[in-house]
Length: 425
Image 1 (spheres, rainbow, N blue to C red):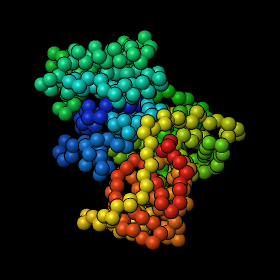
Image 2: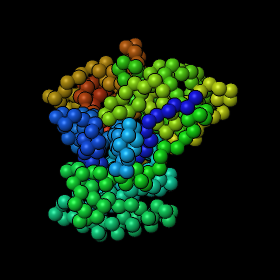
Image 3: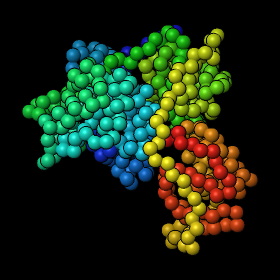
Image 4: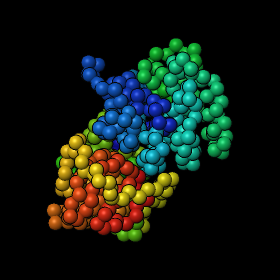
């Protein structure tokens, strides 16, 4: 049975090169759409909630949020003209391109932000190529037009040349253009537009990004595009409902790569503002987070258990192989483990950190399965020679393994060798 809702849905991803203003623009979209109270005190870049993101000033993990906007053409009746815009804030750094590739499948269009002074840069090309290959309509936003060295007209021409180089379709070449000052929450359709809000951007999204497709009466299909973990409800499968409807306590099947399993939806959530809000049901086009399925990974398809459900898998997500691979070996320096800033000194802390990391944001590949097998219990922690990513710990040498201080994008082992996992991003 279809789920009726009093609003339309648009799913849009925001993509750009690093530091071109994506997260700052999302801040003002949330503020101007009424997500926060007028007197609410907010920190800048509220979407960068990870400690490392705030320290570095960049987005590392793709995140979902949503705003509700009433179109200027609405008549003002209850629910009339209200559109829920699901916004996917993506990383701009090339090292986290896998996050972009996975999460783009939750969107139907994209906002491409380009700095008015710097113009298109390497990651701009990468993310635009991905959007064009998916057939997305792309709204180009030339941001930071208030910079003293801004050159918006020249940047516009460079963007058009980039579209041509990437062999965009004729319809994609005729891209809509918006000028913006993201840090002040201003969008303009022309450089001399007197607008002082983001209303022109919201109206452009409603006009150019198509409504979320999908048959709410069809068989259930959800493509899992991301994984998260909640301390209360456990592993979360985040994805878009491609077809059908889902509700809490719904019996579902999970189609994995080569096998299937049965499970059920314990907690169903949608994204409202910066929060995950518990929902009783959701229909095609909505982006949801599902708790209750522990054995679920990025690329899996969640379906209902009607006859023939094992054959209803959606195409799995394919992520480009990393351009850089590295192997990190043990530190043989005589100064290993002698840092005065050392806080954690035992393998138990490393094991706990690795185990937490394997449940969040990491597709459960052969590699993360190895981590869980070797690091998930006190008895197995002695076998765990893996060192962690994205943080620095100094661990002194022991009789079984040598530990080191480093911050890298891969894991390694001294006492046993995990399977290779170049696909984990």
